[in-house]
Image (cartoon, rainbow, N blue to C red; front, side, top):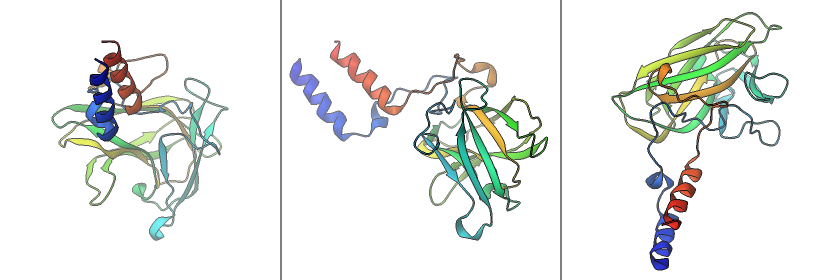
Length: 221
């Protein structure tokens, strides 16, 4: 039995993690650090990426920070700070990378947001589901009107037409306006809003945690 375990361990060392990743359950959140409770040095949120709008002559500039002064759940949220708008939403984005979806199924993007009352009462953002490299295939996106200085939940449900394996971002395009705002509890899951598997704090299991779980089951046999 030990030699079999050793052989499996060696095999797992050379194959992509996705090969051992369990299938996502319907309604299961596919976004890591969706509550922004895990920040890194300098207040940058782990597992997330900011396309700040300064590239390629776009003329925009945005910053971000994990904010521990306000949150929808937990103790932290993500604040997006607009320094300069280009007037074009996709020129800057807050992105969660390496996401997946399956064709022929409904998917929902859901998040909580509020607008900084010092900046105004509302602002526009757009959802963005897109291939994360050339040719940058665009899969889905709609404009969403953030309408309050209080926490409000927003939903975007769509039909997936492509199979994508850990090769797209799920994002908010933010470049249309420079009004500051916060987001929290950002989720992406298969199904309608009613299908979401709700927990006290939305959580996504990482690929490494899935492999560890798989390995633990093998060792227990």
